[in-house]
Image 1 (cartoon, helix red, strand yellow):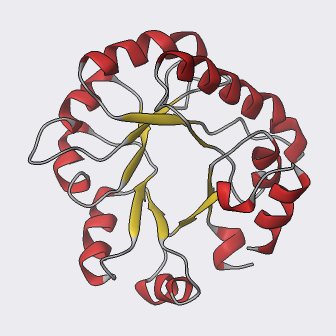
Image 2 (cartoon, helix red, strand yellow):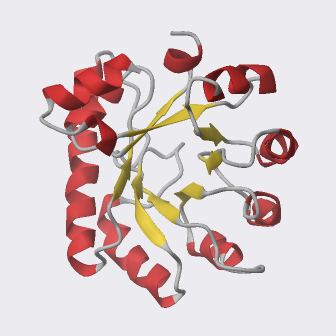
Length: 209
């Protein structure tokens, strides 16, 4: 997407440092293949069954990102397919994720930056303690993820993106592999990029834009 490259350049960043995850939930395999033909390889799903149905029919080099809430009893469906879990939000899920054959795919710790009761994720003040517990379980945490509150203007999300960046930087002083920032969607990804996003999750703007 040209807008992604422009936003990265405006922020003084290399556009290659921002990876676009095309949110393909509810999209047909035909729509996915149209983007695949344009070079897109990262796709995001938020329902275990939908991911399990699509993945066997799609090319093997697609990297599937699981971006929605995940029940522990659905890990067995998602873990063999996903390349990254964006929504690790509790130790119970981490324990389930570590079970199974082979090395588990990397995960991102979901942070509820505004502590909204209807959303998943750990509170900002609990990030370091949660990462400590994840480290004790050998969970391969590679970054943080958030979904900010709904705002009227994209720039109003900036403080929440900035907070996630600060939390990532703090975590990285202890765990250097915690480097990714998954934040920003169709309406606010340019602001997220300005605040350091390395993964942006775009659905409508990439499929319909």
